[in-house]
Length: 290
Image 1 (cartoon, rainbow, N blue to C red):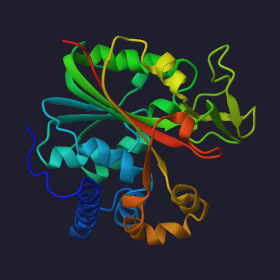
Image 2: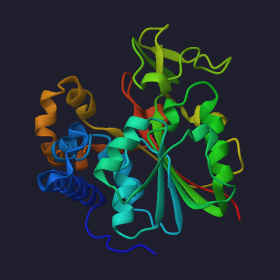
Image 3: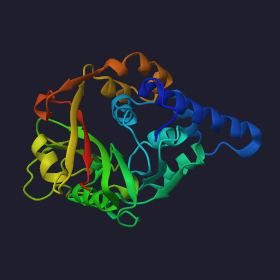
Image 4: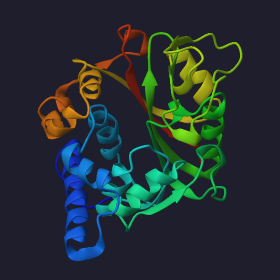
């Protein structure tokens, strides 16, 4: 059962981000210390980043109950759903700093350092798994390994809500320096024979993969999932690119994103409809058969 879910999902997420920031501020004023100042201030200045208006909000509209696992980069979604009484949540991240940040922001949330490729849970532990903006960052064949682990910890009849990046041509994004520190996989990142386009220095650190439709099926859907929903969107205006190109100054106007982003996503038919030089996002609702 879900409770307390009123209003547009993106608005609920923004309100909860402000709620977390305000609680963090009050705890500091009461002498408990302002642990992780960056995280607390960011929750108030940038409650939702541009693509999160779609990714997190899309999953937040789904009915959720039972034992739930979040294998996502942003922890705002499980924090919100736990606050609303929608399921009992465990949230994981491979980065200890990210877990520490969210423990400072939401001490009530069950947060654990763990690798999606080797989940520390027994078989059939969860009714629901959410994976937002993570699977594309797992190098090599780690994305398929993570999907197999999610399958393993889901109960028969359980549901996976997944979002990931898509492009017309499969692409690997690399950066001059690792983005995720010691947790960042180093080249080679692509499975043999993939033949993807490289965006960034070819010998750089792997950052993310962008799938075409065939790649989604081949790399992520190898197990007998029942696919209940597949929805593609792209940005109308390049708000994501402009926002991060202007950081940190753009962070000062992060709350103004709510004036643009909720209507900045256009439904498309598939990855082939993503314009060159950009990426879209696909939402998949997958069920492990009972």
